[in-house]
Amino acid sequence: MRVTRDISDLDDLDVLLRRFYGAAFADPLIGPFFTEVAGTDLEAHLPHIVDFWERALLRTAEYRRDAFAPHGALHAARPLTAAHFGRWVQLWRATVDGLHSGPRAERAKAQGERIALALLRRLAGPGAATGGTGGGFVPLAALELRSVA
Image (cartoon, rainbow, N blue to C red; front, top):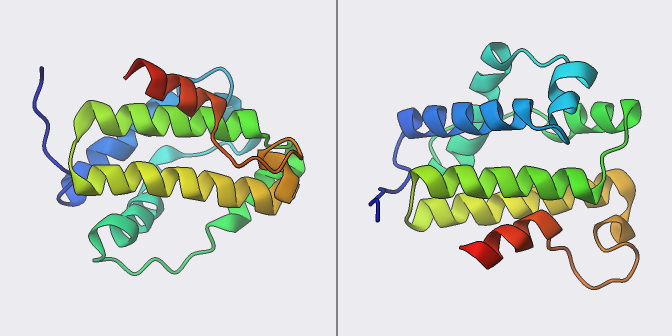
């Protein structure tokens, strides 16, 4: 078993986010949102993403951007669904687990799921996360990932 350490600094976040977005850009389900719909330039966008996660996990940055706006624009161009957010969560959890373990890594995974749920509910309405059943949001992809861990 490989021993990993917790997320501790900006270098850790940079490596984590580059690995995650490398997987996300290549993913057949969510990759087109980055490559075709948004035309994301990762090198230009990465400093903002690092700032966001630095504030969330390390509490050392001041993130002053609107994290919802780019997702709202994507959703307007091509609707984002629970399946898209579930895949994002699956890739995020797998990337974090592949590199780190510890309280911050656990917080990163939990925060990723909360963000996915909040964005989905704001974009598609409160019932979007559950198909209108009200049973709570656990992305199927994330649930499947947890079952093999």
